[in-house]
Amino acid sequence: VVDIRKLYAQTGMFTFDPGFMSTASCSSSITYIDGDKGELLYRGYPIEQLAVKCDFLEVCHLIMKGDLPDEKEKADFDHLVTHHTMVNEQLQTFLKGFRRDAHPMAVLTGLVGALSAFYHDSLDITKKEHRDISSIRLIAKMPTLIAMAYKYSVGQPFIYPQNNLSYTANFLRMMFGNPCEEYVVNEVVERALDRIFILHAEHEQNASTSTVRLCGSSGTNPFAAIAAGVACLWGPAHGGANEAALQMLEELLAQGGVDKLPEFVAKVKDKSSGVKLMGFGHRVYKNYDPRAKLMQETCREVLEALGLQDDPLFKLAMALEKVALEDEYFVSRKLYPNVDFYSGIVQRAIGIPTSLFTAIFALARTVGWVAQWNEMISDPDYKIGRPRQLYTGETARDVADLNAR
Ligand code: ACO
Image (tube, rainbow, N blue to C red; front, side):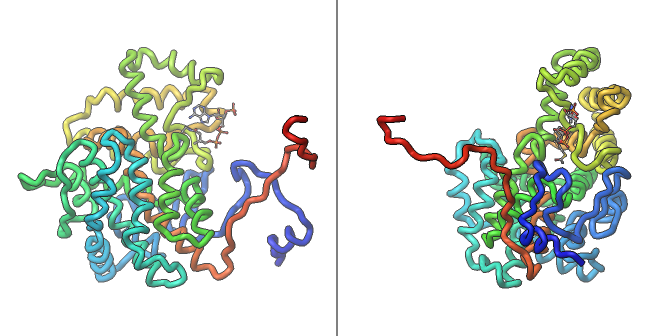
């Protein structure tokens, strides 16, 4: 067996592959994607089965520990996560330093990074027990942090976690509850949000996960590494796409909706316009994104349950998808709806503000980031990530004196 790393080191050979179009940066046993078949497996289980048979914490157990929990393991894991949902009270002071109108992703990047200052009893990444507790803390506290950021932005009191609720119901209550009355969880909404979490939980070496691995490869603590992942996710080509997709649909609706579709699609096809069909296209899925199909079903269920089946935005999204799937531009480039095309409509129906969509994605992806980081750190041969470059600058030259330049 040829050790490619040694071979490259000996021969001085290296590959030039901007955007990692065909270069693997690591090996991993967590997620398998077949982009041509539209297949996504977490630890071997198809996403279509996980989305209907499991709840989010079962999927977290699977992703982190390698298999689905049995009943006892599920009860233990749920207990462990729900009992780490509180955050250090001092974090409120840190949060209150932000402007109320700050973007939630700006706030979240700061809050997640700040966890390393509040939980410095678990920063020794060479110790498995530290890695384990930090991982659980991240998964458990993410909903609390996001709900706190939301409550702060609208000037409402923080709602503390309530541990007898499910992970997702607890988040809904912290977001939409108030201290004066009991919060009643809508089960359809809870299930839909739980499914959004499952569908976004892990997706192998995407940009934010690769960022977490690269950042973590220096040996930094997991809170710092996950904060880097949150920052990367914010971009509109990645997690920011759900927010951008909904904004695009809302603008299109305001300009005339379905009647304006031909004009809009023509604009997207005109490269000089710089307009992209947000929520369409994927680096790996070149047939369809299996998560988009599940999301579209969930979207229909939620809108029906909430009496919003005639939602003009959903109708516009369906019409836009139909036009695009019949258009040569999109067909020839294998551009299909991705998970973000419909997730924004579901979140909007639930009452989540658009600016918070990417933070919800971050909440769900935290388990994937944490599992990938653990997988890397547990590998005795892992190395600091250090990409090569193809230098295109000046050859060596002398510095002239200031008055002679
Ligand atoms: N709208 C219009 N044209 C597009 C789109 C789009 N959404 N996506 C790709 N294209 C075109 C490109 O312009 C390019 O055309 P060309 O061959 O004539 O130059 C061709 O399709 C191939 O696209 P690339 O950008 O090379 O594909 P890449 O794999 O690098 O990008 C990406 C994938 C970033 C997701 C891209 O499709 C995109 O920007 N989509 C919109 C943003 C989005 O929805 N992101 C969410 C991704 S999924 C996630 O993060 C959960």
